Amino acid sequence: MSPGVEAIRWQDGRLELLDQRVLPGQELYIPCHTSSEVADAIIQMVVRGAPAIGVCAAYGVVLAGSAAYTLHQDKWKEHVATAIAELANSRPTAVNLFWALDRMEKLIVTLPDSENPFEALNSESKKIHLEDIAANKKMGKLGAELMAESASPFAVLTHCNTGSLATGGFGTALGVIRQGWNEGIINHVYADETRPWLQGARLTAWELEREGIPVSLNADSAAAHIMKQGDVKWVVVGADRITANGDVANKIGTYSLAVLARFHGIKFMVVAPSSTVDLSLTSGDLIPIEERAGEEVTCIKEYQLAPDNVGAFNPVFDVTPADLIDAIVTEQGVVLKPTTEKMNALLG
Image (cartoon, rainbow, N blue to C red; front, side, top):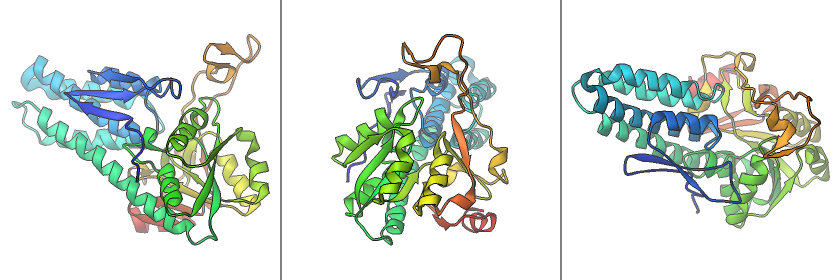
């Protein structure tokens, strides 16, 4: 089974990121030699998707540690702390970012001040990357098993991009779709365009098309009409943060899909690694929601859509309440009809 495109490459002591801002027109890799360049790549959406951001942040710490030791020798740790803070400030909602940085920080505490930390940090970041790929493949199998309980084959609808581009490889929700297609459970995918960054149009449709999985791109506002036709049996999405009660923060527009799915009797699946679960937050009301510039809504690249001086509200994420979710799939298992008790039983 294809692992999908390689969006994150670590070689020769540098990080190379497939620039997702210019896909599908160009396949261009951006080199990152410093942790600041990694942070900027995250801010500028060169790389996006919660698991991918976490993996990149870990590699950013490797770059920071190596540079700090070269410049400051046995005082490298205090300078790495500054770099980690910069990485942490790059995106506020995706909890995988903070999970990966916390894991790297815990390792740093154990390392001697007098030795170059590169090898130890490099080894840990590679573990994070490989563990993410393995988790995605496990989730793909668990999600496909769950969907196989429905009469198949059938179509699914997905939102934003949750494939190899958004993860260490293979994908979360798109990993389930890959597995489902491979097993003959899924026969078609509807991909929301995902305004305003058009990840569904530029990225998801591109990933599916290059693997030969039948996909129809649709405007976000066409989702209800598609659901009404009756061939969609599951909506499958990813997550950027899941709280202790099973509320889910994901790309803006996910909440409305969950409402529509419930009305039409369609099941709703969230697929995310356990690193996306934030048990420190009791509900989605506590999740910080990133807002970006209004120009992302009023313009597409250099083309202005709206009149001058018209403002725009541009939240990047929304929160889907747990009672609209049929299943949360993680590499550790599946939570059906999530509640605080069920989430804690699996992941606490």
